[in-house]
Length: 129
View 1: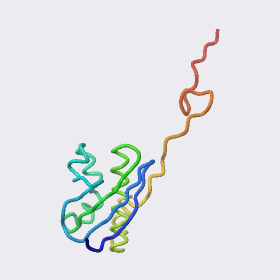
View 2: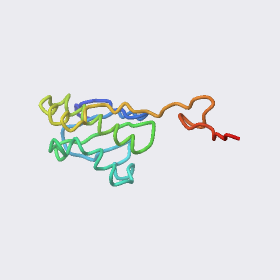
View 3: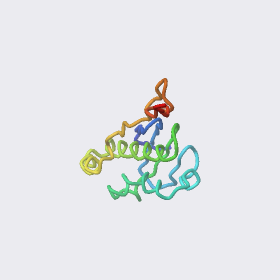
């Protein structure tokens, strides 16, 4: 294996460890090709956004280990990791990715359930009589 750029991307409870390589090969997620791992077409667009914006889709490939959460959050974690890896590879890409909002970690998480409630905020049904 050749030298690569490493970065971690996160979203909700999903965490993606991204290795970005210089030449073109098959993109891999958890040892599978992207087409085998991801089944929703909108998630392809989500993951490849940093490479499309910087116009580097044909010159890089990535290997990702991703765990936690669902497939949508995993795709966004991969996008975050790819953005960080591209910036550490070439600092001039920072302004493009920052402007698109791809370097900011989306910190929203599921609110915890409170005691005496059905869910985080949903209360019991109230009856006057």
